[in-house]
Image (cartoon, rainbow, N blue to C red; front, side, top):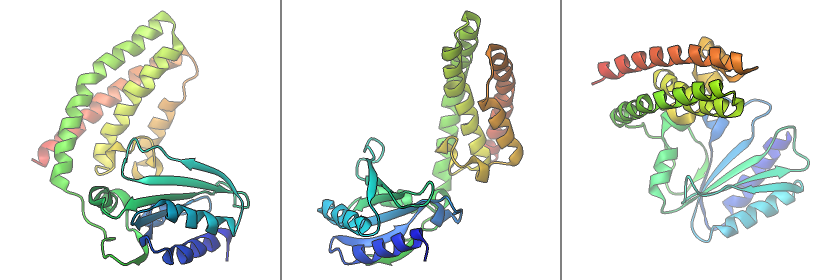
Length: 259
């Protein structure tokens, strides 16, 4: 049994005996069937208070297998009801860490979000005493309405960001020009393309493009990411602007057909 399999088996076994724990399932690459030799383990836990005892049990379990070399307590700015910690282990294989998220027993809204099949895949359930860990389909009509609103917001903002890019280029301010280019031109382009190629994950930014976008689009975005000098940035911003408006036109047509 390899290191990751031993960790997973030991964690599930010990947490199964923790009286606060109601369910354990894997998300991430296990849920999306994209695991490879470098994948981490994404453990999700549904638990009653006090959840600090869940983490105490988990950490004792991990220490029985390997020294914990680092812990990152993820901030709660995005999901206030979720407590998430990432553990690095001294004896782990290359790139490995354990990503652990504890869902409060009464946090229905966030649990529903993570059960959306089209966004997060099929949860790999190890046990569930509640019957609540099951996939559900996303509300497609609500998603389309969000896209229409978001596309309008992006189109309104784009000319301002585009102007700032070329303004800073004319000033010779490469750092400012690149910041506006990356945040105000490239990122919106990726989001619009996401509406076309991965409509239920259009807000995922640059993550996972290699498995959700066509190869040609990935190559275009990769080209836009690498800038050598001010002239190169000017040329790429000009090319990106055209692709942006072409992509917006495609997205508008697609959204119009779904009304």
